[in-house]
Image 1 (tube, rainbow, N blue to C red):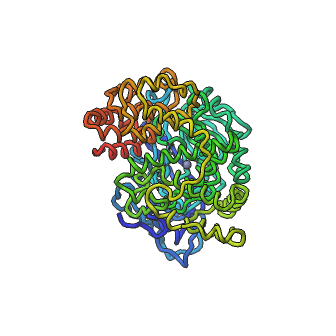
Image 2 (image 1 turned 135 degrees about the horizontal axis):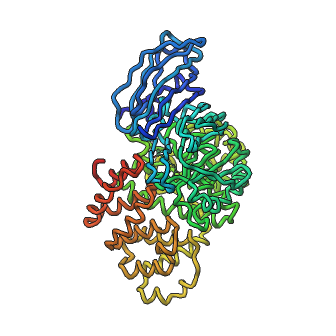
Image 3 (image 1 turned 135 degrees about the vertical axis):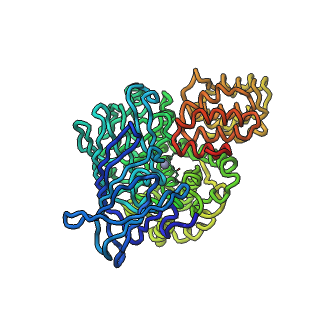
Amino acid sequence: MPRLSTTDPSSYSQPELVKIKHIDIDWSIDFGTKTISGFSTIQFVILTKFIEEILLDVSDINVESVNVINEGCEIPLKFTITDPVNDIGSKLTIMLPTKTDGEVTLKIIYSTSANASALQWLTPEQTLGKKHPYVFSQCQAIHARSILPCQDSPSVKFTYNAVIRHSKVLTALMSSIRQGSENGITRYSQTVPVPSYLLAIAVGDIHSKRIGPRSLVWAEKEILDEAAEEYSDTETFLKTAEDICGPYLWKDYDLLVMPPSFPFGGMENPSLTFVTPTTIAGDKSLVDVVAHEIAHSWTGNLVTNANFEHFWLNEGFTVFVEQKIIGRIRGSEYRDFSALHGLSDLKDTIKNQLANEPELTKLVVDLSNVGPDDAFSSVPYMKGSTFLRYLEDLFGGPIVFEPFLKSYLNKFKYESILTKDFQKYVYEYFNDKIPDKLEQVDWDKWLFTEGMPIIIPNYDTKVYDACKNHSDLWATKSLDEIKSSPLLKEQLTSIQKIEVLSELLENSEIVDLNAEKVDLLTATYEMSKSRTRNAEIRFRLMRLVIKARLQRFDEIFDFANSNFRMKFVRPIYRDLAGWDIGKPVAIENFKKVKDQMMKVCAYTVAKDLGIDL
Ligand SMILES: CC/C=C\C/C=C\C[C@@H](O)/C=C/C=C/C=C\[C@@H](O)CCCC(=O)O
Ligand SMILES: [Zn+2]
């Protein structure tokens, strides 16, 4: 795939010449045809002397007409759409009537395809309530182009108003501020400029419950109360994040608990985080995802990567802030534990998921020939946050680094930036203060070396050590020795149990896994399905079952079919694909359930299994 534009390798649009400033959206949601149809009125600002055409991204969109709006009159324009390119979609070229400068407004009438990659349409049977259909979107990284023609590049930020026409019995939600809803017409308005990937919509039989002064949780009725209970610390997270990052600029912060096929843990859609139900463990042990999504309100949503090669600016910073929130609330040893746990995940990613694509283990990647969905991994999250922690420690700790962080967020809010902008600001801010420390940072090595981070910070290992002691016991001792070990009298928390399993997975080659050991482990830490709802635990336990080559496929697929969060299903399918007996069973199961997965999930799992979709 050729590099599409100088600004963004994953977009046909030319943000260096022209940028969208505002969109008025008018959409009708049709569950019968599984399509959204309507129009967008798009205001562009021209950044060069003049332009004669405008290029937009589209994917599988049927464009009916394009008109230029001039002093209230609409003049039809010629346009062409190229054949789709895998992962990227098509180029919509709009011919302007004359050489144009200043600003221009276009009205585009269009409808989506039933296969729009950003959307998942659920039948009533696929919902908890079983009575009404449901549709939701996931636009990151480059799927917004499948629901509206746009400059689908995070280097472009725009405000929008939206009118959503839908069945009166359903609720329509968007990632902005609700202006009202009457007779099946719901209006939203986003007054903070956002990139296209932060557009989000969900329509279904969705209800809400207040969980804080600026927060509602939205969910199907059947899980509303337990969700409200699980996420009841949201306001504490918000206040702590404000203390670290500055004022919260998005007015409301709501959560929408997604259907289990939502492919990610959470998505930072402004004012309305989408969160997977797999974070509901019943004991708040997995709500760090909410701290993560709240952190994105600054890192990612206000200061945004200009293209996805610099995704670490979104995710590395967000994990860094998430861990600070955890440290502030639970103690610094838990901040460090979270970082150490992240490093275990990173090791797994580098060893397994990216074993054949080491160039994707760099902090800044080259996406000229790779789609963002294919490049996605824990690397920008964990390597990025480790780099920031290294800088914080080197520069003098939080007392020095936190004022910088606030200043950085304030300086670049509403903008889209590259790594070099961050680097330049580090020098601008610290040059007079700590020039000797600045000299020690090997930027090239941090940004472009493959594999694990070049330096591992000196973390407090107090919480982690207990996990390591337990995992060492299981890895090195006989069953009798394990059973009689005094260590097992020590209670571990859910997050520590997760780490014990991660360590065992990391060392699975030497652990001598067998049915008895797996069963004893399961019983000892109360990890059976009947004893825990913790999906992170169940996920790792199922991976151990596979590593032990136990043919417990019912149990494995009971979990792998209960949700289609890619973080869970992809490693399970990958592990099965590496086992001659597991692979055909996995393929058979995948074929049965792939239509219930969101497209990005089905596509990547098929790749993991080495089969065509
Ligand atoms: C270097 C990587 C380059 C580009 C990747 C960018 C986007 C990839 C695309 O697949 C979308 C990702 C969306 C992520 C949303 C939420 C995550 O934070 C969830 C993390 C995994 C999980 O917890 O389930
Ligand atoms: Zn994130």
